[in-house]
Amino acid sequence: MKNRNEKIANAILISAIVLTALFLRIYKIDSIPAGIYPDESVNGTDAILANETGDYKIFYTNNYGREGLFMNLISFSIKIFGNTILGIKFWSILFGTLTVLGIYLLTKELFRSTRSGLIAAYLLAFSFWAINFSRISFRAIMVPFLLTFSFYFLFRGLRTKHYLNFILAGLIFGLGFHTYIAFRIAPLILVSLFIILLINRKNFLKENWKPIIVFAIAILVVVSPMLYDFVKHPEHFQSRSGSISVFSSEVNKGHLFETLGKSLGLSLIKYNFWGDQNWRHNYPPYPILNPIAGFFFLTGLIYLVIKTAHLLILRFRHGVRDKKFEIYLFLLAWFVVMLMPEFLTAEGLPHALRSIGTMPVVFIIATISILWVLGRAGRAGYFFKLSVISLLAIAFISIGATETIKYFVFWNHRPEQHGQFNENLKNMSLYLNSTPASIHKYVFVNGSGKIMEDGLPISAHVIKYLTYRKAGEVIFLKRGSDIVLEKPMVIILMGYNQGVIDRLKTFYPNAKVEKIDSRPGYPSDFIAVIIN
Picture (cartoon, helix red, strand yellow):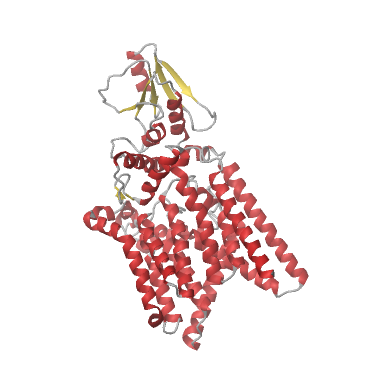
């Protein structure tokens, strides 16, 4: 009866955590962040084009090239929700939420403790870092989701010996290669784990060679379409990362180890001391972890390193085979490997997006520290135990409250955030959508960014996505365009340009120039030229 009640209570707790995580990831999604970043909008316009043509690609070459799974999923959500903000962000919200469930299952499996799973899930659910990227339409959000569930089924398979777990683990891990370039380095985690298990488990290969083959085949089945694409189009395998690699002589200036040391140091300090300075990724200049969660992560990491070294000595000097050895070393391998996409580059560091693969393991490591505290308290007297539990309860409440307020109040109201997410481009789109159908609509394309395959700068894709089938025909005007303008009309300037305004007034003396500013004090205004 006691076990049954405990299971019910745990089920209620994890359900509450996951549902709260969902709420934090979908609440006011139309207005927070303030706009849509151009990289998000290209995902949306590519998805719309895929729906129109029926050409759902393995790899999309637009915007430096992107693995196709995320765009194809967005094409489906657009069919349901339309070309709305929810339509483009739905999958980020879903994957971000499900990762909370995934980290619960994985942590519970690793430590055979429901309490550990609940702690890790709570920390991830309320993390500013996790909430933020779960509300941005970047394909990288799939990486933590796939890693947690793949490793969960893999470790569950190693324990239960059921082939279904190995198949699921392989299929999910294989999907990772269809997500984000940083995932390409994830197989190093599997290699590390394989070596660890060989070292620590007697007759491991003899007893598990069949499940390992099943796991590998499952991965290969899912990866094969992408591998075929890379063979057919070798240029798809290349990426912009080569130009910012620490190994590039243009980047390291002949000082490889100095550059590598600096990038590694910046990558590590973002968790506790000086975070990502990009307002899209973080709340500068603060670290990406809450001070309390950051403290538990740092102490947990130190404990992990020391304990692993101790277990390593026990294994090779005294032949001790401790399961904690393989779990701790696996977690360290995961952390180091998924940090590599960040510290092996030397641009925009610290970079919370490139290291998003470390997100689950960071909170699992923090959980180890909390479990250690609870373990010590459990062996102490009643009043000491009560004091520790009370302090931890206060700490958890503090993490939940401060991280939520930090995102939805302080970060939300910072003008820098509104600028980084191009709120003005969103407002231009809403303005065009609300303009009567009888008015001809033009957008003067003097915005910034890389030119996309349709000839428009990436910033114009925010307008292209949000006005699709909502504003009627929107014509994008580029310098030197020979398009004949028709009255009555409104011309939106993506960027302020007095020369363009003066030229329009020369041809249309009655032109009315309006500055549309729905949020004074924020970088959200734009210029509309109205000609009747």
